[in-house]
Structures are given as structure tokens and as C-alpha cells.
Image (cartoon, rainbow, N blue to C red; front, side, top):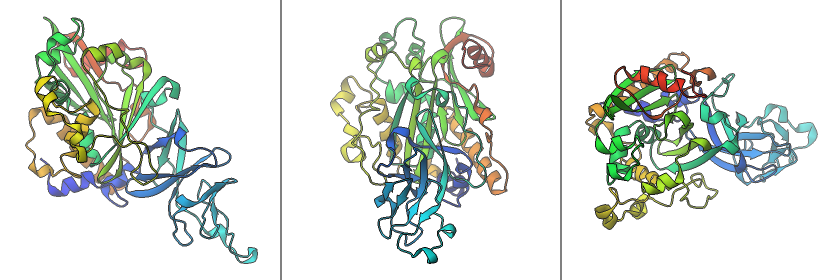
Length: 426
């Protein structure tokens, strides 16, 4: 259990908070490259409690600025994106992607002081279909070498989805492997799986044991169960600083996957899911198991601060819960994996009161990860660099499920599985 003070430290991400300052040491996936076009409309972004705008200038460069014009604080969202900059419609002041004031249109040339005016701007980089923002001070690190983010955009599938709750409670859902065979698969039995599908062992035994390890990049767990005689079924997953997860939702050898749980503010989170197309679960197999993701079932985007990538399911419609289906062929009665996760994590409240929890052995990964985050945030308060501050730290990290020979521990099993994979070195 964490204390009230620790819960506040873990969950608050605004400017000046320990966790917010930790987050600002890393590159943050802020938007899809396709969401901003040259000389097009600015895009509202809420990141770490800050109201920002993304825009692409005439030359194709992307800027991320504070939405408030530094002249009289009118919102630059209403501005004209033209001829290499964003022009405020209030008085015509114009700013480039780095926040430099290019023109003070309502001030006589001999009186202007544009060289002394600067809009708050953050460094940006584009790579493989994503726009990244660095919200810290000083020189940023290199972009993280997370395997899924290194594939070109045509070789991956992106799924963005907003959650109306704190970033940590949704991230912790990815670190909780035993919920999979209840919330998502509680109605399935061994019979729905092919004889050579190792996931059948999860239906046979819904209470795995665990090994947990702290790593250079964060934490990892191995959930293990008996498989066929002489074999063990493993599910390996990772937390990567500051908000990335790699879940065991695919076969280890081809599961190139990562998800960022990006804090928009304390009570809203943007999930950015990236999965290599070669590692996607076969659609026919998914249908056979009755798997529905629901990742594409979104409302049309709007231009407000929370208007992007919102699911149709919500607290207002009880996440489309169907009690008849719950009794017949669905453990939850909620349509799709994404909506099931959304329902349970949002039902905890905007920021869950962790003082009411009773953690079990199945929650060891969550407990260790919380402690790792607390230690890292306190280290940043002392002026130290956080873990995984170099891009190379993430190289070769992969998760997934597999069957291994009985005997040996998690790290032995992980190294052996990695050695079989061409793109995940041991």
C-alpha cells in the first residue's frame, strides 16, 4: 500500500510536481504526423497539464507552443497558419515553430521589440509517423530506441485512445496479467484454443505465479504456469520509464509492440499503441476466440482540449454493458477488450484512492513499479538524472508469451526466447 503523500506524488503531473518533472526528462509522443498539415489549422494538445498547440509551417516544420499569445494572452488556436508562422488574429503578432516573434503587425517598425518576445515553445522531432515533444529544459536526450517506434509508419498499426482517469491506473492495468483470463477471457475455456496455442494454459490455470525484476529501463515480470509435461508457459512484460509498457499480448518471437500512457493532465490519459504489422494476432484466430478489440470504435475528433481519440463507450452509457451477454457468452458483457479495460480503470475514479487497496501476490509487479517510480521522482527532486536517460537503454526489450522447458527462472527463459528472435537480441 502507498501512503496518501506517495499517491499524490505518483499521480500529479503538472509543472513543478515531482512526477511532472520526471516526465519532462523524456520525449513524449504528442500527435500523429498526419494530424497536422502545412499551413493547416493548429491542433489543440493537452500534455502534462499544459494547454498547447501543434502546427506545421509552410516548410513542413512542426512546432508545439503554449496556446496563449505572449502579447495579450489570446489563444493562438484561432490564429492564421501562414507564410512560415502562426499569426494571432487579435493584433497580428506572428510566431515561428520555435516561438520566435517574427512580426508585431500593430506596432510601428521603429517601436517594435520582437527580438525580446518569445512564445513558450517545446522542441519537437518527427519519426516514423509520430510527432514527439520534449518538455524539459536543456538539451534533450536522443529519441528512445523502443523497437516498435523504430519501424516505419507503413509497417506498424497505431491506435490512439483517450481515457478519463489518471495515467498510472491505466498503465497498471497493463502490468496486471492475471486480469486477462477474467475480464477479457473469463467465458473462454481451453476448447476454444487450437491444440498448439499456448494461450490455452491461461484458460486452464487462471492464477499464475510471478517473478519480478528491476531493470535498467524500469521493471519486468514473468508470469508462469505449468504447460505440457516438462514445460512452462511464460508471459513476459515490461514497464519502461516514464510511461511505456510492453505487454505479453502476442507470441514473443514476432510481437513488436509498445504502448505509451501519456498523461494529458491528472485525470485524462492518451494511450498510444504501436504494434508491428507482422506481429499482429491473426484475424481469423482472433475471431475464433471471440476477441473484439474495439480500438477503432471512436467518436469523430473535435477541436476541444479533450476532443481527440475518444471512445464511444463511456461512463454515461455504462460502456454499453449488456447483462444478457454477460450471462451467456461474455464474462464482462462489455463489447471489446479496450472498452473492458476502460470501464474498470475509469470506474476507479479520476485518481484512484490507493489507500483503500488490498494488494495480493498477483500485484507484485504493480507494487515494485510504483516504488521504482517514487524513487526516480525523488531522485529528480535531488537534481539527479532519472533512469533510462539514454536512448540505448531500451534496445532489444521485448515482451510476449511462449512455452519453455521446465526449470530455470524468468531471466533464463527471457534470454532463450530473445535468442530465437532475430530482432530482439539477448
